[in-house]
Amino acid sequence: MKKLIFVVFAIFLFSVFANAQATPTPTPTSTPTPTATPQKTKKPIFRANKDQIIEVQKMLKDKGLYKGEATGKMETDFRVSIKSFQKDNGLKQTGTLNRATLEKMGVVLTDKQKEIPVDPNSFDTGDSSKTDTPTKKKSPVFRATKEQIMEAQKILKDKGMYSGEQTGKLDDATRDGLKKYQEANGLKVTGTLNQATLEKMGVVLTDKQKENSSDKPK
Image (cartoon, rainbow, N blue to C red; front, side, top):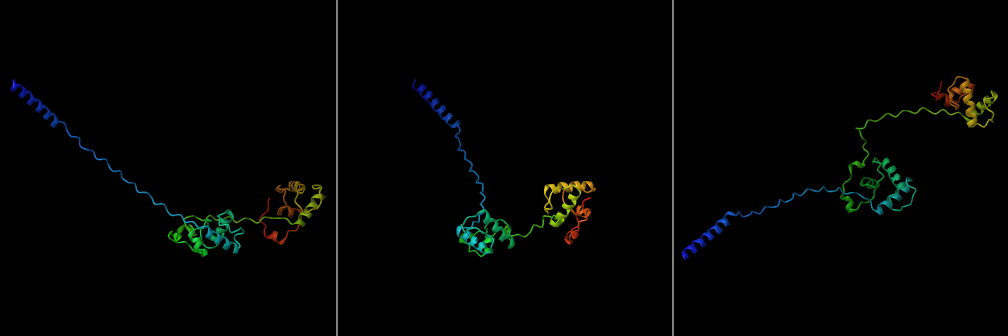
């Protein structure tokens, strides 16, 4: 009987030991270390302080470029005067007090400002990549003198195309009379005293008008 109990107990221990060996021990999984993304370093922004702004405002005022007060604030009129200075000194017209502008004005920089390099875009070097569009030369504007208008008003009045006085002014009544005259004489109806109309009326042109003889409507 004792042998039987011993055998059963031995079998029980063996099975427990066997199950313990069969169960795999879980291996700890290593958590991957996240890769740190490199952050872009921000470019330092150059800013003029209040004392420098006041100094520049006084300087530009002395040069006649600024008419305001030395408030130490970057106001619209002040920015316009800065652009004028930059234009005259080979700088890009930004309207801001960048390092290049302050140095051109002879304003002392702070130690912190000296650490910020001069922006190469602060200089007006001209962009050669842009093709210069040729500007069309404007034709000189033909203008009749007061005496010519008065003479034309008299002619129109004699022809019954104008009932006003000889004022020497191109008012609405005179323009209406000119339109009637131009239509009756095969001229372009403009209501203005252009060169062709004056010549048709026999009004003498000035020397300047003869030089600028580009306005000849048909």
